[in-house]
Length: 246
Length: 287
Ligand SMILES: Nc1ncnc2c1ncn2[C@@H]1O[C@H](COP(=O)(O)OP(=O)(O)O)[C@@H](O)[C@H]1O
Ligand SMILES: [Mg+2]
Image (cartoon, rainbow over all chains, first blue to last red; front, side, top):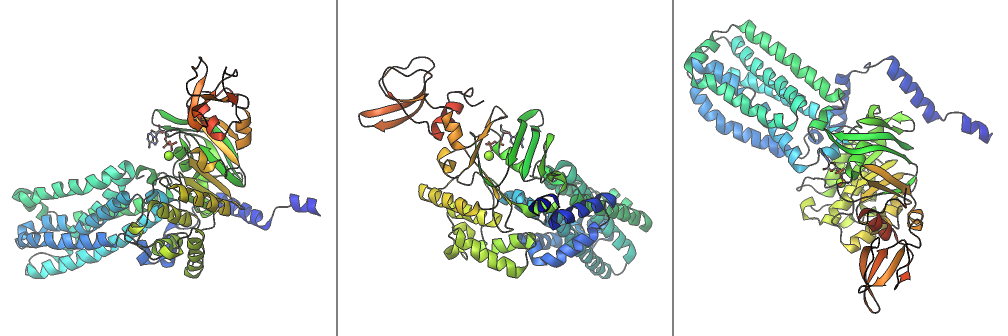
């Protein structure tokens, strides 16, 4: 009897073997997006941003301070596009940078990376939440500017400018982070500020931006969004990603 | 069961570990080697924070690199020199860790109370982390690593920064945790593990030097360790391992193949073996 028990696989072993066969036979069958949704439901938003709440507070504070001079410039219609382009990813950029910087500084990454819900998953969820908040923020910003400017330019055009900037930044920053790690987290915001200051300070560039039609911005937004979601996907599914950050 | 199969780890051009093979079954393993020998590198690979350049690591026959969450579910890991959020309390931090370990709130609260008691921190459970001493933080770290009741507990230099009293406490704690799981802890301090580790793993020149019981390691130096007065001149091939106070002043513990003219043979300790291997360069005995 004992011999048979030694030979026959236990219930746990059997289950594991079945799972392994299923995994091999149906790779990637379970959707990463559904997993993410389930995780955020189980963990809750508060735990998702545990320890980095102050980063958001700081981001909003900095944004408010910076928006005042920006608003003064944006009232002039020719600078509308360049300012929108600069401002709409600002909250996302600040919050992303500050949270990553804090996680890096507190040296908790290694630790978190070994917990069941990995830091990669947490980071992906945070980026998605930040993205969603920024989309809502951009819509609000456009609405306010549109009414302030006396509806001088098309609302849809303004939205397309804001979204193209936001998704370009979101996708680009995640891609750079995957390729170059923590260095990129610090460099990308600087590059963005420098690039978007060009049209703000140089009128011809600003006028040129104003002449770009809606569909071009929408295309840029779609491409940026594609990169953004594919990078979120990589973040969750690639085991090597985090090593660049440790 | 955890097995490391011919693992090599390179950082760029630099080879940190070469051709390491090990088997871990239930019990306490002490990874004992000087700083820079590659202890953290090995432990990070066991924790899937790094992946081997060559070779593989298996848990019950399955490559841990592809087990993902399943593996992390059985792993408890305490990094060397870990960070924390200073303004949170141990209980808050553990609740957070528990949520990310997929424990329900009820199970988590029960376990947190039990673990905080086990590590002797029930009174400090609601103090801010920044108010705790280094030893207390270290114990919070161990409690966090134990939250998911891991089958594999990896502690990287858990005794660094502990005072002598806390070291004793720590050894008792490890004794209490060692049932029914693999515990691997690293240190460069012999006394931290000589009484608690069933097996001692030593690394030298990037390679595995030995994985053996403390008494086996000591026995290889039997008849080669002597205690001599400090004023006796030493001959070549005699290495001073340590100094101590004898009845008639300072005495030296030396490693020598031949009995010295003055002095007595003493039973080798793990400390002697460690010093013989790493300071006197004596690794032939152990191979
Ligand atoms: N990320 C890294 N890049 C390059 N070299 C590293 C890195 N991490 C560790 N090393 C080197 O690998 C060797 C082993 O380091 P480590 O595993 O931290 O040793 P230990 O924990 O035993 O003190 C050291 O020489 C160290 O300088
Ligand atoms: Mg180390």
